[in-house]
Image (cartoon, rainbow, N blue to C red; front, top):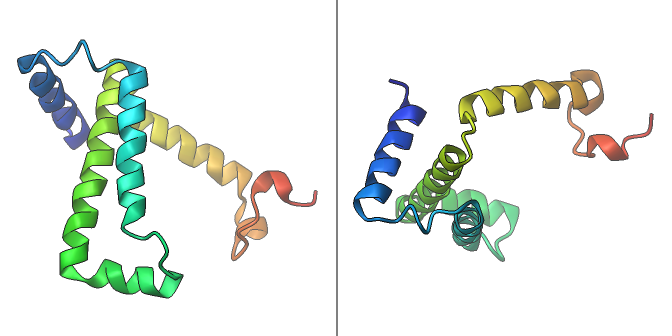
Length: 119
């Protein structure tokens, strides 16, 4: 069993055992996911790019960052499960779309969004 599927199964079991499926609506899960992403962002808020690089190297800070990233991942997996979305397939599809939107010759070293590039 792949890792995503295993986590999906474990999360479904965890929620079911606690009778939480009634609360795990797409809206609630998306809100929880957003909240956890905000908690991850708080770890870097107000830091310069250089400071954020140093913080990420601190083992104490990295532990907290890791925990917030895990929360984001778990809510994302749970939301995908409730919506019957295969995350691995969705991610592969998105990578292909991004490769089309950002061809190497136009995007290399360039942070301009594809829709804002001159044609």
